[in-house]
Image (cartoon, rainbow over all chains, first blue to last red; front, side, top):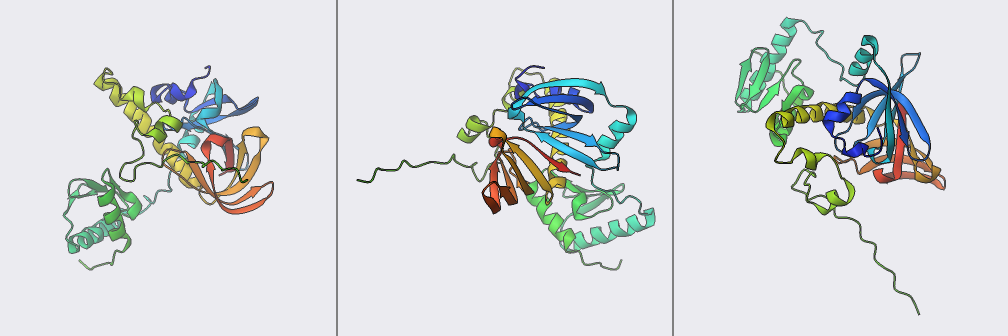
Length: 165
Length: 128
């Protein structure tokens, strides 16, 4: 890959993801690591280097400084898995179904009490058709493309006062 | 006689009501040539556009999670001209033009709060 890295586009960048690469940047600086992602806005590369003690050092190379990117090898399953989970938020899905049902009910009642239209859809809650709350129904589990609604519902859930059924 | 000093004008920030991605904004054109214009090309067929958008969102989400995990961590910046700086990472703006950092260790002292232009940075590193 020669220069022009920032102009490649997401479909090209994603081919480099989960591969071990060397990146030439700036003046004769070479970085080597597993490519976690490429920011589609700034074309910056995130390289991860796993250490023996279980930690990892992360290098971010700015897209504008990239001179050349070369693939060294593909990740085996274990490395790909490690990469995939390295920045995921810790999930609390260890909760038993009964506890989840209780939380879901409590969030639903709280939203209804605050005059927010909410319906149950399987194990998700749907607010006004534009926002979804997944298990375990905390402020971080809301997703919506409407920032204003998202912010309001997250604040509501943050201030949740448990009500009895 | 005192010589007049030229006024240094900083680039305009993004329009407060927009989300900062307006490809026609002067700031965007000056600083942030990205792949967005290619995706917006009208001749691109819908299916390809969709796969491209999916790839874009996957890449971006991972990147944002990486930025999130970086906040309040010690980060070492390597700048142009072989300058190395250490600081505590705070945040970045959405178009990755500036990084907000605290306790920036510069060669002439420690700056409590600072903004670093991403154009001056070659790479930076932190331990997870």
